[in-house]
Image (cartoon, rainbow, N blue to C red; front, side, top):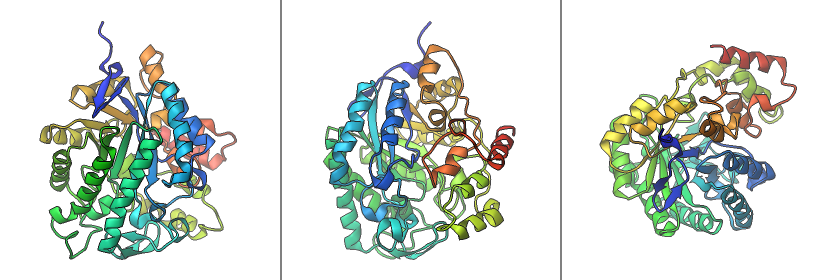
Length: 409
């Protein structure tokens, strides 16, 4: 009997993964004071030990102005040795190490970014909520250089791959989407203009990465609402990235500030979200969530491999390697995705539930994750480190009830 395709090696650019599984760049919220922590080290090392082909450290901002959480990595010289310790530990377990770079743009805050939040256009981001200032052209050029400097640090920190976040409504996505880009200059208007910032960033990243790093890009297949990017424009973005010769695309969808559950699917656990928020700092938001949470964050039904049908349209449109992400929890569905022509699969919640998930699939101990998508881990990650409810002692009764209700649907 031939081994499952899941456990065969695969190449992405100049790197070779031991198998076709990748821990996706789901936000860990473990970079306390914006630097690597023991929790971050232990988690990614455990995932590597658990059999993953490559694990991705999430959501690292290329500069201070892009930071939206105190538990988010901020790339700077002083953390390079700590990141090198992490990549050495991941490599010692037989896995490769990737890091996601981006900038949160209009979803930052004064107290995390150290300045007024900036974005493609001026306005108000109600999700944060915050007033946002439009980036000037010289600031855009400076940001491109910041991406380059961050990639240079990534190389010295021993990573094998860098993932550029161009989706989910963060800064590159804010330039791409007509919902957030109302500029009248060469960075706004036509899709070619809206792609200009992304193109500048990718060219700089490729230049600095050279032959040492694989370069993948996380990009939307649609924004998830009428005024955002739709599939036809997102297909053009994918073709442009293929033209720029990035090594692979991670296909995703959704816009955190407008359609957050399109990204993750299922119901946002509002009781959990409100419970862990600081009552002094976010009292107004806790009240808002209790009163209007379901209107602001509507449920999007979960189903396994929920992006697959959309992703297959992109598979037809480009020849480059594509990485599938979105609702992967079983061996059967992973094999189906790989048989559709995707080079690898990314996952997160299955690995939050059990860091040994991949090894257990390989040995036949299980064929499916025990994660039942209550999304407790998502609800708490905005305030505390991402963790599955079964790893938390003494959960309040109202949160336990919310989890049980979600899992029994």
